[in-house]
Length: 335
Image 1 (tube, one colour):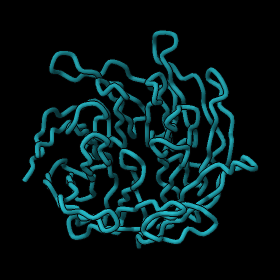
Image 2 (spheres, rainbow, N blue to C red):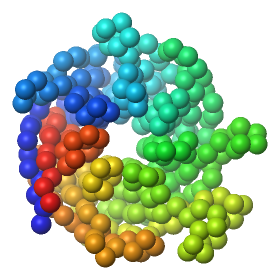
Image 3 (tube, rainbow, N blue to C red):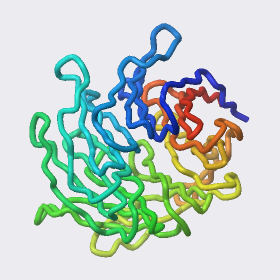
């Protein structure tokens, strides 16, 4: 059995902490919450501390933050219906752009691998794709209304300009730009969960996706491209995503976040039962019928709901979490 070892417990935000995000270099992270502030933390010696507090960008709760792949920009999604773009171009972090258009709460934000596209989603049921048009300029490239309910999460594919979104309508949708007319279209709808899908994440090469839900299960989805060796039909020459594994029985409440480590292949979950659990693919796992085992679980990782977990992109086995209990914790997983 593996172990989840607590390395640091950090406080600073007032109220619940909704999101944490590692900088691409893995030596800095940002956090956000209901105090309408973003904190940027860095490591000095063996101590993590807040280096910057950004408190003038939003009027309501900040739900999610994400660094651009180059690490120069930070995007924040807020219940005030805006997404703010922060950068350090002048030496100090400042809000250089505010993206408006959603009718109400923005729930999630994600940068494409190239850094040239940004996606946002909202309780207004829409997904917006923005093009980075120049320094601090963003243009709306598409408004996608494929979901029938509140959209909880958007995540870009790690290598392609393919976007995934997860919703209160119990589905995941995939989007890609049509090379003929340059319009963004929904290319696939993934159905199997029986309640709200809170979180999604791709594996390292983007051939699989993990999802977590209010239905207390985790599901693994696999991409089957046109001409695949498994003989899975691909109508209209579009990639088909099939649910190839369901993990149930480990969580007693809604699972709010899931992170698939690009370095180790481990999957971490954040749950409403205050726990964090780590899953590992088994050695005899088959490509079309993968199997995963629970490596370790920290039942009382936090005192209240765990809202977010994210693997460090550089330091293998390092995990960050945040909670309604107002703390951020940094963990080390040992196998």
